[in-house]
Image 1: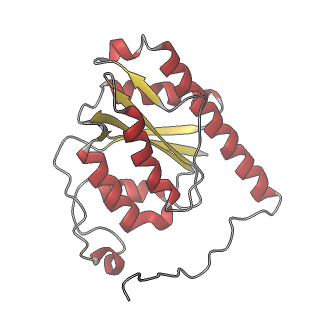
Image 2: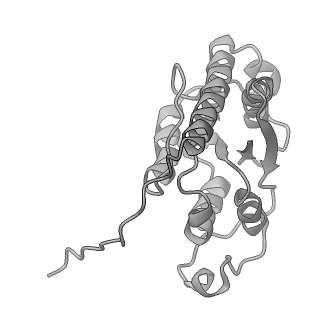
Length: 206
């Protein structure tokens, strides 16, 4: 079993990375393989709604989105991490997730997911709520922890002083490992993901 932890910060080894590493350690201790995937610090274009991914099977824009979607096909769970910018997720991770879920959502659905956010002081819960919406629209079980998944600090060193935040990260990792093992046991017992109905799209303009 493998979990991909997505670092949505422009800083490869900053506060978000530090929090994800704490989750990673808990997952590894439970025998779960992990990979931290950094989306990079180059510009990531937002989705332009062109629909090309429906024909190509991937997004036409060339950046780390398609690389992630390729990896996602063989992953069992996901944890998305973002710094908090103006009480919201970073613009980069938002553009990244918009396109990853639109072009590759079929490879994510049915797989457990969670998000973690890193902030200096405030805005964490708003960013946390924002990112959870991607999972709830894509049939993905959300993994919770003992508190909202947030750490505080302006530097990695300060994050490491946030004992409650780090414990929340470890609990999240343990809960993700537990759910993945439950799903694996369920599949072994013949329990499969529910069959989806054909989507119904209601137009409210009459």
